[in-house]
Length: 133
Image (tube, rainbow, N blue to C red; front, side, top):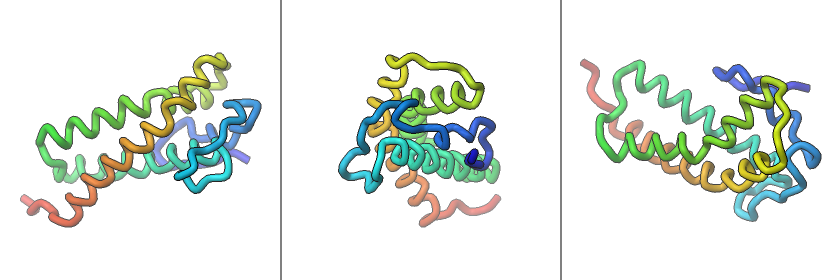
């Protein structure tokens, strides 16, 4: 059963994850997930939510124009690069090497942490909304 995630074209990705696709790695202890596939899907969904929020704020011209915000956003994109590349390849039906899949696994926790940092900055924006022009 394919999964439908908003605003991304390749979102059947993690419905296909299982031990044979990305390995039988376990989820980090603090992730509250039963399997690595569940954890990876959760991180991907969380990132999608944060990116949607960023797009909405950008369209409303409510994103702060400062280095901390821009650096945090760039760090999130960098940390989640392998997860996003995996999603795109999976959506396109491409095969992936075990080495690449291992890179995806190794990057998930830092991706998750960077998403949480970006979300914390977005929460501050929500607490102190910018005045409408």
